[in-house]
Length: 447
Image (cartoon, rainbow, N blue to C red; front, side, top):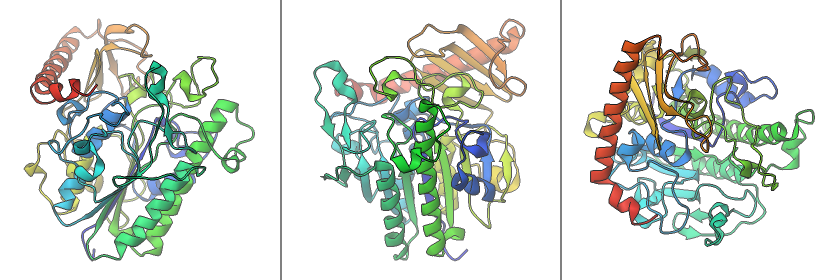
């Protein structure tokens, strides 16, 4: 290796575990993402930090559980909304300290107040939008206007400069800008960290005809999902091709994941009917976005570093988005012990087939709390749909034989249930305490 590696981190939005062909999907293919997986390691038990957007992204970027990063819920999109701050440093800030160039292209969704913007949180360059979603062609944030008091807001930025580029499909804009930045940054002597945060396939369900025409046989809701993911897949292919053209593919670590499970929200279609959307697939797992059952938090996770990470790996070890920070920092020559992290360096998992360094993994979402310990997963007050009551106060599964969480073992295994309940409750209490002492007041003042 001639120099420290570059990093390209891909994040998709509301993409289900089962919506890549390398993850088992059969009704459409994602050849470019599949090729990245084949050249590296594909995780079958990779987890997001949360079943919703903002906390998941905060966990990836900070290497912390969302509550310890100061982002526990979907953040507002108005221009005074707080969110992530330098109090919880990002991986971009950490590698920037090592001399890396840093850039984000795409969706931020971690706050719009000055201290919460990308350029104040480790990124030299930002191109994209800051709210939770935009119209793919007008780049307007409509979602919060449902309250009857909030106006739609245009949301397209280059650094702190707002600009207009109406009529261009945002997925393609992200790809084009990412390719441009790779060319620019590769001219410099120092390596780079590029975060490519696609907003697809998050609502609204928009795709140009050329992508829809690839899937004429699919039903309408599935067809638009396939088209939007196909546009992302094309983009991944173009970005990888640019790394090859620049002669730096072997010097670049590529990581890919989705932020959470697929959305059932009726606003996906915007057709006024108010019925759930069924275009995304959790790959046989239970639950969707908002749920702490597997379908809400288990997502595709792929690492590729040609010549370093052995290709063709399928890794079943449970690991999580918060592990990306310490892993990449180690690869960059940094020291994760200098940061307050919940994630762990999984280099040995990737390079040497080591087991996961985690004894437990935890999640929280509103009244839901979950823990995974080995093959067992316990969910407290787990919801299948955010507007419905909890399926059960306590739900224990053996994921090694029941990844769909169909059988509740809580009564059959009372000792394990009690142990995991105690651990999950204690962890949640720690999150609540740290939140109240560190972040709660700032959050309340801007929501």
